[in-house]
Amino acid sequence: MDWIIALVALTCMEIILGIDNVVFIAILCGRLPESQRKKARLIGLGLALVLRILLLFSIKWVMGLTDPLFSLGFLTTWGLPEAYLTNEVLEISWRDLILLGGGLFLIANSVKELHHKMEDNSDENVEPEVASLGSVLVQIALLDLIFSLDSVITAVGMAEDIWVMVVAVVIAIIVMMVFSGAISRFIDKHATLKVLALSFLILIGVMLLAEGLGTHINKGYIYFAMAFSLIIEMVNLRVRSVAKRLGISKSELKKQKPPVA
Image (tube, rainbow, N blue to C red; front, side, top):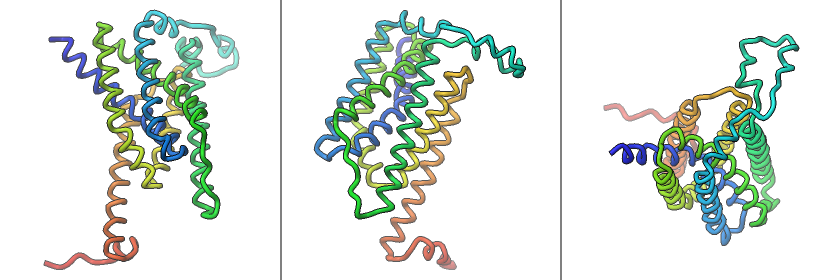
């Protein structure tokens, strides 16, 4: 029964690790015409599924990406603290380069989307810029490659049988496909959630940069912060909804005193 435990644990982990992927796809697809968004989401997640399965069947090559490619040993002559100049920091692998490039890519795109969001809100007379389906799919494919690499390496550490990893990935992607539409509509409907999502994508990009530089960050802290911020924002949305239904502003709602029993 060990394979059942591994399958359940790995599937849950793949779904959790895929949240940022789904959020980024939802934000990118939000710049497409309404008629193309569902198609782009399904193609993007389909690409993620294909890439992860291909990487799983090339697991020996993938694990080889963690082997040192070159060393930054010359940094030891710069007088930097030796405690930080470990082999993990000094030795750069293909995986490190991919994570560094992916982190920069994610930060740049998230900042760009934040900039577009601020411009769209600052001038109501300017129509939001509409992206092309091809450019969105290219960005999704690049991001899928980065997240798929991290996902596959995690899968190898949690399961031994290749078919368990493949089944877990397939189930996780199907779950993402089912809920991606609802997530996209929810983010598009609430502007503050989109800003929050982009802020955390920037945080994930910084985490990828740190991983590429040999500094490991517990992802649990990041996902906990995301969950906590989401709960706070959901409370704010509820307050605004009540205020709107009562026909009063949010500040006025706060000033009202609760009835005395």
